[in-house]
Length: 173
Image (cartoon, rainbow, N blue to C red; front, side, top):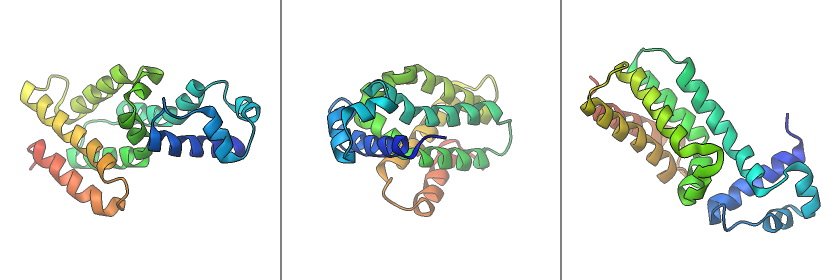
């Protein structure tokens, strides 16, 4: 379990990364905001890259676990569960959208496309048609965009509409 100081560093860094981008946030700004020295910050994280990785890694682990442990089933339930997953990590997604350089950490760009292909296979099987892949891309991408665009609203206000729109994009009954 991370130490309280480590968790505080991650929370402040995440907030600053969301506000001003990863590249525009210095370790000095993070340490100043926390009232600690840079060496104290370096005690917990060897570099800004390590700090960014520590913030992004829980999203990576959750999505990989989600894609690997789901079986075929009710597509609407899958959409609901997926939306809740991305909602939990919406600050990290906002951070990545705000500063696309964050996608370079943990080689996320290509991995995200891989996760999307896995989820599309859960929705439509191993050989989805081009139309199904397009619909799923719109559905999944749209839900992610809703988690970013409406991150300040309550989950129960965003989720039903986002899932309904995704289900419509997938042409679910």
